[in-house]
Image (cartoon, rainbow, N blue to C red; front, side, top):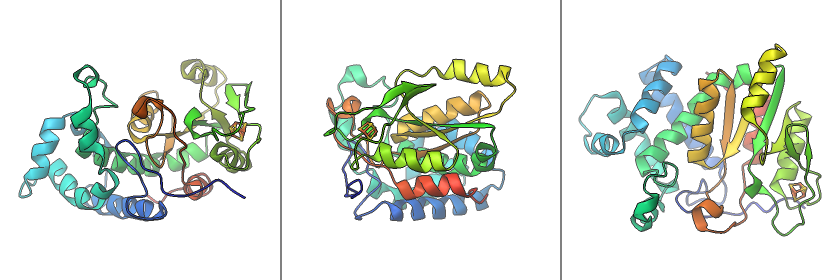
Length: 272
Ligand code: SF4
């Protein structure tokens, strides 16, 4: 037995697209990142440019319509949009129904163009930080609570930085992800109460480098990775296969993550 790996639909996105697995998504995003890196070989400048523009929703919409422009963001959006839109099909309906009071929530109000740039940014950031993360003195992984098996009575307990899985369910993605991470010398935590600032300060004091691997839905992961970068922490990340937690649906639905991709990320440095 293993965790059920069948397509799941998200409030705004699903990495399954029209497929039975998420491998096609990962092949696509790698192919797109390769193409985009040809436009600008300075990966840091590329990510910074993507970040700067990804805040400007209206400009992104115009940039996508303007297929003739040689502006870098317009070119990037027009390359990635035809490939990535099959993964973000529910976004517009979600935005139409989003109450005005929630329009200021950056995560909930993420537009389709922003999703596509975030997908690219996560892949490029993995390329940028993969070796630094793997060579950090201490590596920790932060997994979201919503990835657990909701049919089990979760036995995870607080241990060190935060909660850790006790491997009680063979249907649980946290269980398998934790095993992969532990086998590769990465401390796996279910992020509930852990204080990142304290951890970063402690590592600095101890003169030990810290690396973070994040697992979260695309908007959360992107903002978390930016925060780590801002604090000079090498960060890599894997998006949840869809956004299905209480924040998006008002209740929790079972979710999944691509375990093979976690393995790839923690075993071999991603090619730059
Ligand atoms: S396998 Fe781990 S995370 Fe999953 S329900 Fe059991 S203790 Fe909780």
